[in-house]
Every structure is written in C-alpha cells, then in structure tokens.
Amino acid sequence: MGSTLMYKVRICQKAVQPLFHQRSSAFFMLKAEGSSSQLPLSARFLCTRDSDSHLGSRQTDRRSSGQTGVKNTTIRGREEESWYDAASGRGRSSSLRQHQSFPKSVFAAGTAKRTTELLRKKAALASRDEEELVEGTEGRTATRGAGKMQPPDRPLSAAEWRKLKESLGNRERFDLQMMCTMFALGSELDIAKSLLTFVVMERGTLSYELLLRYLTLCVKGGHDAEVFDIYDIMRGSFPSLDTGALSLFIQSFSRTARWREALSILNEVKKVFSPSPRHYNDVISAAMLHGDMTTAWALYDELIENGQSPLQETWDTLFKGVTGTDEEKEKAAEAMSQSEYQERLLGLLLYMRNNQIYPQHSLASSIKTWFESLTGQKWTGSWTSASSNGVCRCCGSELESIQLTTEEYQLLKDRVMTDIIQGRDVFNKTTPEELERFKTFVKKKPAFDVVIDGLNVANINKDKRQQSATLLAVVSELQRQGRTILVLGREHMLRPSRSWDRHDMQLIQQKAHCFFTENISKDDPFLLYAALHSGNHCQFVSRDLMRDHKACLPDGATRRLFFKWQRGHQLVLDGSVFTGRRVRFLNIPNYDTIVQTSEDSWHLPFDDTEDRRSCEVPLRWLCLNKKP
Image (cartoon, rainbow, N blue to C red; front, side):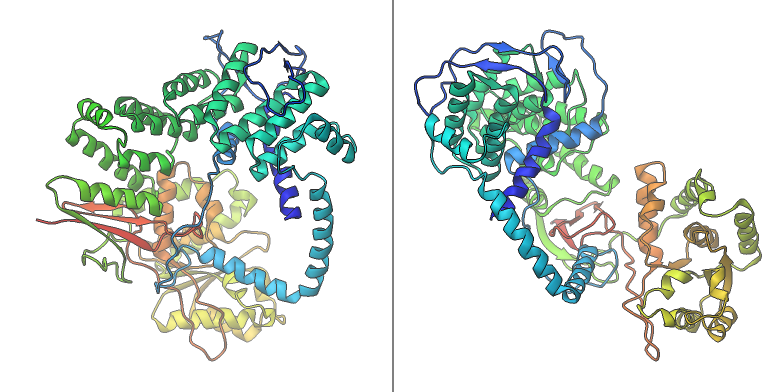
C-alpha cells in the first residue's frame, strides 16, 4: 500500500504541473474563524497576482472576447483528458471477458498482450531471485516514503496539522503534497477543508495552486455544491482562469441543473483552443439528459467538423436518448422527429464503419437496446461470432470480403508506391541504384504468389544455428503448395557460417526466386513493392506488423485500406519451425472486421476486452436482424 501511495502522489503531482502558475503569488485572503476545521467558503477573499508570473497553461479572459490563441488540440486534449479521467474516476475498467475458441490470427484481439505476458513470465522465471531482492528493497523504501505523507482519517485542528507538518520536517510544499495525496486516496472533504483552514491560519492566504487541487478533489468526489462556491469565489477574484480549472467546472456543472453554464464555459474555452472530445461529451450528455436535443446534436456536429473523433461515451448517450422527465422527453420529441432521430443515429454507425471504429461492449448494448425499441420494426439483436469462412453464426449471413476491390487495390498500390517506396526517407533504407536494380529484377520475373521476408522468418527460432534450415523449411512448404516464391534476404546470408549453411541456401535458391539486398538496407519497402506489383492475389510472409509503414500513408482512409490489405494477405507462422514437422501458418480470415449493413441487418464487431491493440481486430459481433 505504501509504494502504491507514493506512486499515485508522483503521478498526481506530474499531471497537475501544466495547469499551475508555479511562481504565482495569487492568493485568497480568508477570515479564519478560530480553530474550526471547516473552511468558510462564503467568506470574502482578496486576490493578488504577480504580474511576472510564468504561466504554466493558457488562460481565458471573460473580459476580452476578442482574445485568440494558438490551437494545439493534440497536446491540450491529452492534458485535459488526463485531468478529466482523474477527477471523474474514468479510465479503463474491467470489461466483459469471454473465452471462446476462435481461429488463431496475429490480428485477433489480445494476441499482442498475451505474447507480451508470456515473454514476461519467461523472463521472470529466469531472474526470480534477483527480482525478489530488488522488489524487497524497493518495497521497504517506498513504504517508508509513503508513511511520511499518509493523510489523517479525520479533520484535524490547526494545532494538529502544525504538529504533523513539523514531524515531516516542515516541508515547503507540505500543503500541496498533502492535498495531492488526499486526492489520490479519495479522502473525505472535511479533512481537506481542515487542511485549508490550517493553511489560512498559518499564512493568511491560499495559493491558486492549492485551491485548484482542492477543486479537483471536489469534482472527483461529486461535491458539486462545493464546486459552485469555488466557482463564484474564483470568478469574483480573478480576471481569468486557466483551462484546467475551466475543464473541471465544465465537468461538474454538466452534472447539475446549472448545466447551461457549462455551455457558456465551453464557449469561453473556444477562444483559446479547440475543446477536447471530453469537453464536448460532458455538455452533450447534459443536454441530452435535460431534453435539449438541438443543442446536443449541434455540439456533436461541431465536434465532427473540428476533425475530432467523439468519445464512445458520447455515442452511448446519443443512442440512449433523452432519459429525463416526461416533460423533457416531450420537448425532445418536438425538436426532432422519430425518423430524423433514427437517421442521425444510423449515421453514427456509418461513421464507425468509415473510420474503422469498434464500439465497446457497453455501447454495443445501448445500440442493441435502441434497435429493439424501434416501434413497429421488429429488430432483434444477438451476441455472436463469425465462422472461419466469414459467416455470421447467428443469422447465417455472409460478411463482407477482406479482399480489396480493383479500385481499392489500385488506389492502395499507388499510395504505397508514392509514400513508402518513393517516400522522402526511402533512401535511408536503401540506395537509388539498389532500388532500381530491384525494380528491374521484379519486372523480369513472373508474378509472385508469395513474398518472404527471409531474415524475419529465419529468426523465428531462438537457435541461431538453425536460421537457414528454418527458412528452407518455410520455402519448401510453400513450394509444395505450388506457389511462385520470392525470398528477400541480405547479402551476408550468402556467406557460409554457423547460421547460414551453404547447402541450405543453395536449395532455397533452387526452390524460389531470390534477391539479396545490401546488409544496411531494409527489407520492408522491397517486400511491399514486390507484393503489390505482383497483383491482388500475392501474399507475404513476415512477423512484422508494418505499423511504421502504415503511419507513412497520408490519411486515415488509406491507412485503413492498407490494414485491410495486410490482414487479407499476410501469412504468419504458427509457432516455431522444427525439423521434421510440417510448417503451419495462422489463418487468414476471408471476411472484413468492420461495421456493415444490408437492407434488413446490421453486423457490428465490438470490443469485449481491454487486450486489443490498434493493430488487432475484435472477435465478437453484434448481429441485428429485422423480422418481416
């Protein structure tokens, strides 16, 4: 527990830093009442701020409506979401886990995590004694450190706080560190108030930084009435508030009847930077809760126009619809007809399809409930999976093929040739002469059925003495299948050594076409060129997931096309290769894992696990069918 406490303290301190004026002397003057542990937030405050303060975050000034600021949505979005997640307890939580038998694939959700965990377990067994020694030492150190900053379990008087501070060596930032610790451990509000009272009695002031941390604790604990008081105090004492405080106010106000003030704060934030999807989500949720569908959808459209991807929580809110009073539901019905509302929600599903987004299980449940609630349409939803040949196990419908159309293939081929093969950094991976030599080589050869990354395949076994034998086994299996093969390798593979047997390499060159690049060259651009040049039927063998190359493509649509082509063409070895055993490859699905629809059905792949990486696809599906 001790080490966990100190870890949380460090995380909190790090997350808070960008939002504070680190040298600011902005204070609130309090009238402390005796030794009471309760902070009278209605007391009058006097604020001063050092004009030389170095601002640690952008601020908005309600008096300067014409103020502009540089937009940096990526960095700011991440900062604000980290604040929001901390204050609301949001983040990854345990989700539905179903262990079923699915066809093995390197792209199946959870594959990367299971592989990583397996490697970690093996490493742990090899160094167990050393790790136990290190963990024991670190644990004792962390426990001693954590014990020094353990918050009290009840409100303390000023004298008790002073005694505690002295026992810790009169730390200069004692109040900030203690408030941070209380935030991390979820201490009671009265305890935090008693700390503020002590600080006021000791210094006569409260720093902006301390009050902001107290605000964060209030928002996390759901103490919205307390947040209202803090809001009034800060508005009355400061001409401007930093974006961290405004983000917290948006979150808190959105949960209450004063939600429209959150909309005003959101408009204030827009003067400085583009609000994050989390900002929009809070206000959209509030608008839907109170029956204002016009505002909710207007904010959603604005979010999309900004080029941002909505949170799954936002979609969940829209599919659940207005959940307020009968009067609010009636108001919503007047603002948008049932047919218009249905059309908007189906548009959300098409957005997920076009952007290859997979709903989480909770969102998929809301979608299922919405379909089944449509009056007179008789939709039914079922949780299911797809067979290895791409048939829905529930309704028997065939899912869309993983193979690219002629137009898609030509588009992808052109983009890969331009942005990867002929990209600005291609000659960091090869030389112009070598690339031209390879292009000439490919043009003189017949179209290949499969291209092998020779070095990547040879390294699948730990025994480096078996590299040439491993590659030979894979080539032999593909030759047995009647494939026309290209093996890409490096020049050093032709020099006899313990790893590269001369006889093995001679057999490989007899069974396959071979091209050996310089030792400093990278194989991947050559592999992609050969595979795409040979045609849509050509597959490739490699364990490399090509994430770097996909990132080189200019837009999301092309990257998704590349991922689709990759999943339908990449052969990955199933385990190690052993002499005398048949070489096996993981299954390549013949269906596309994407939201898809027909006249009377929808099929939605959804996330039911936290194990999925960006290079993997879900295994579970929601099947929605409309009965005649």
